[in-house]
Image (cartoon, rainbow, N blue to C red; front, top):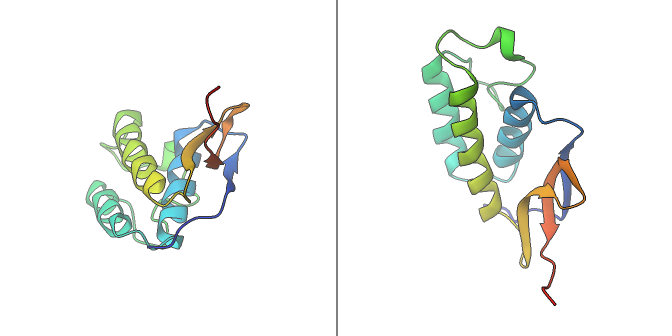
Length: 111
């Protein structure tokens, strides 16, 4: 597993189809061991396999039986795994100043 660099991986979208693709691609680029299992789960729903098995597919192209609820569950799994790739004193999630900017951000010290 590779430790990520601080910064954004996707910004300007809260659409589950965009987040799913970006998060899976990032997880695979970071060589996280969970990326294969998540890709296999997507294949079980009917997605084809690629480096990021859902790249370029918007919601109306998702396989039958795969909807927003399933996507949200997988996105949560992806976010948890990506957080494990965070550099020291960082977290993975949305930027505190922009909820549609997802990436690896430095933890702010509490006063």
